[in-house]
Length: 157
Image 1 (tube, rainbow, N blue to C red):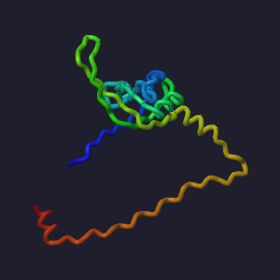
Image 2 (image 1 turned 180 degrees about the vertical axis):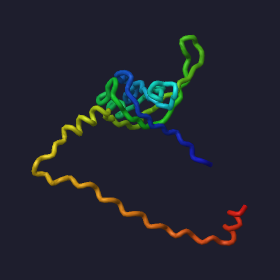
Image 3 (image 1 turned 90 degrees about the horizontal axis):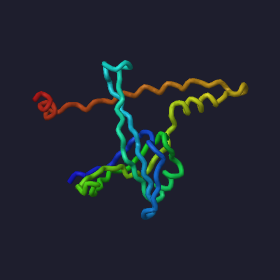
């Protein structure tokens, strides 16, 4: 039987400040905006952007870490799995939703912060000159196995 996989990894921006609830060992939730860019010849820039929103939930120690480290607008990478909840809506009708259950996350830097950090690095006058990295050696060609009568027939077919 094939192994089933329920794994998701998303990067995007928090849409609001994470909410924390004292449920079990604690629960934090927030919405994550994930942008997808695609080619669009009709657009002025040659591409368009589509934003999808995902509800993210963390439990226990991960929830506490989310609350301490994340804020509205932060760029984050989340890893986890999908979970479906079934409930009765306000009209007493059966409804369902899918959310990302966060198992781990990483706070990402935006491009402006990365550029600022690069600018802050200064080279002192006494530092040795920076050398370009040496080229990697070219890979050695690998001999191909000789064809046998059986493989030659399969290739011809």
